[in-house]
Amino acid sequence: MHELAVCQQLLSQVEETAKANGATTVHMIRVSVGPLSVIEEPLLEQAFSIARSGTIADQSTLEIDQTVVSVCCRSCGVTGETAPNMLLCSACGDWKVDVINGAEMMLMSVELSGMPESDPPPGQSPPGQQENQTKETEYV
Ligand SMILES: [Zn+2]
Image (cartoon, rainbow, N blue to C red):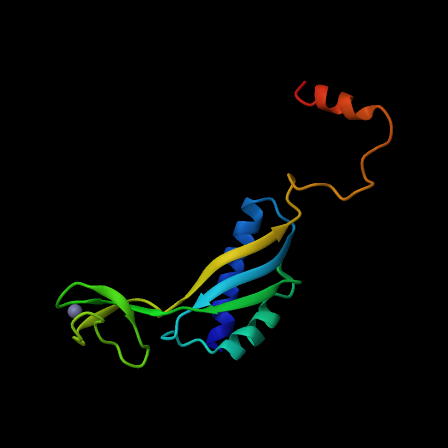
């Protein structure tokens, strides 16, 4: 299944992002899928639920955005949006165009948590006078 390979690739990208941010959990992964890509959304969701198990994104959800198709005209050089089933220049109507957007899936954003700089859950700070001491001795 093509979508499974796509998901595994996506998840390794997500894991790298999470690691770089020191996150321990991934909540949501947002991708954009172009109308010209060969990816079937239901298959992608299905593949994602398989591929995510055992990864940092085990509990995450997948959000899929549809992107528009953009083409660059070889005749007049104008870049514009077009219908996925009729690739024509939006300015002059020429069919000699290059697809510059809408043919692939891209990782848009990742929602992470568990970063060291995020607020600790309430009720976990030690009671009493330790608060100031820890800060003063931090760099000794
Ligand atoms: Zn044109």
